[in-house]
Amino acid sequence: MHNKRGFMKEKAKFALGILVGFLLLFFFLRGIQWPEVLEALKNANPWLIILGALANLVNFFIRAVRWRYLLRPLKAVGLHGLFSAICIGFMTITLIPGRIGEFVRAWVLARREGMKTSAVFATVVVERVLDALTILVLFAVFLVFYRFPEEVSAEGSEFITLVKTASVYGAPAIVLLLAVMVFLILKPDLAPLWTERALFVFSERWRKKAAAIAASFVEGFSVLSRPSYLLPLGFWSVVCWLFITLGIWFTLLGFGIELPFISTFFVTIIVAVGVSLPTPGGVGGYHMAFKAGLVYIFAVEESTAVAAILVCHLLAFLPVTLIGAGYAWREGLSLGAMKSIASDEAGGDKGAPA
Image (cartoon, rainbow, N blue to C red; front, top):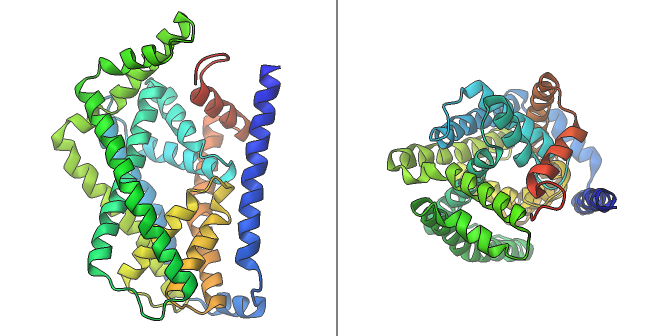
């Protein structure tokens, strides 16, 4: 019965993710003049689009370089192994709602390198915190020095206000999370102790197991206690987001959309918010957020914008998905197996406290 309920819950999440994605995609495509979109696709500069695709792929290699720094306190891991795990993880994120690919790539690397999955996954969490902090810092700099165009539409003005509000509330949350992480790193014995006390309603067996997981999780955060790693981590985090923006910028130029690079960075921030919705492959959220940036804020002609967004989405997700599928095939992993792995790693064994 427990397995059946869990299965139905997973199916409901999957269906909800698909429903939300396609609803947003419907609104994105509603009223589009397809002949004009096809004309924009036909006239696009293929060489600039290829440069955009290469910048996107370089971003994943940069993520591997950064991840290696996060893993050094645990074990020295080769870049190829890290790159393959990242590609498998992003492939899973593309195909299955809920971002379970983060669990999958941690599991793949931990199995291959003989490491604790919880400790490896902790470094993935650190990555996400670094990404959030990098976006917030760069966005703060952006707000200080950038002036939005005066012809912003009413929808664009509302969207700018929404993004600013989200950053205001998001920054303290990220800083608080980082402070808790640093505190637990400085006092690693407190993590298992607090975990065991918080789960007092469970049996001793599960409390001990959860405490052990918490201890290994804190181990994954240990890189933050080493000042010599903080500078390269910050550097590669900035480079990572610059290459993401570079990929979008080249692609937009390929469609004759000549936004300044700093304006494209603002679009990147908006798209990052849209991709956070748990839809497969970022479908819907990516498109609507991108359209809000190009059409509502920067007044790009709608048909050209739609053509560019469709290609940007394809370049952001398809190449890494195909590469990840190749690596998954070599690892002997199917999508069903990866869903099972993520469920086990996220929730523990049957009956365990999540």
